[in-house]
Image 1: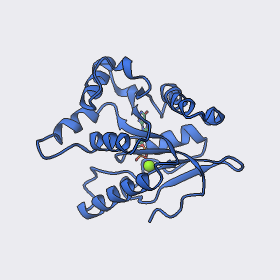
Image 2 (image 1 turned 30 degrees about the vertical axis):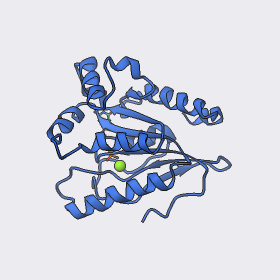
Image 3 (image 1 turned 180 degrees about the vertical axis):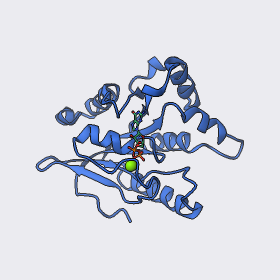
Image 4 (image 1 turned 90 degrees about the vertical axis):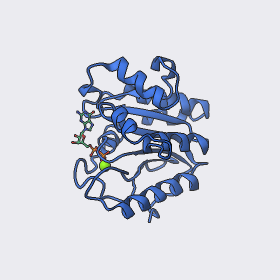
Length: 205
Ligand SMILES: Nc1nc2c(ncn2[C@@H]2O[C@H](COP(=O)(O)OP(=O)(O)O)[C@@H](O)[C@H]2O)c(=O)[nH]1
Ligand SMILES: [Mg+2]
């Protein structure tokens, strides 16, 4: 599994639950159409997109999560594969983009919070930071959210980021991939690229 990665030194990864809009975002960032909204949770291979002559790749990791059609064992294996991929390539990964559904994320996090369970999105956010991958949470589907600031503050708080969310614009990026409104994300990604002296990659964002 996961042996399809092109040999590139710089990488941005998208990670998140199934159906949050990773493939739609990938299309928005690359101009290339990937399969969206079909057989969610079933695709287990990453989608890589790279450019001839550029030492850079964007990777859409397989969706993890809540589809009932996906057996528990497959879900666990997918999660393990994702974690291992990120660990193996942490040195090359310039930015990790955790994509969440802005309408559903807080409810899902709360439903899975208990003394012995850390919700997947929170766990993945902490993991990315633990392995020193600069992380941006792309809060997608904001076109469906009415109480924007309230939702974003709640989400920030669940991630351990003290509200107001506006203090965290390098980390919390409200977007609508489907509507082509991703500028908050591209600005946050550029911030982290700049921090790593990779302004040469701005042309992709
Ligand atoms: N309303 C809305 N729907 C979106 C947005 N982005 C993606 N979707 C829809 O969410 C569904 C899942 O998208 P997809 O990109 O396949 O998600 P993935 O499983 O994370 O790759 C599709 O029906 C998309 O059209 C968005 O910004 N707003
Ligand atoms: Mg997808």
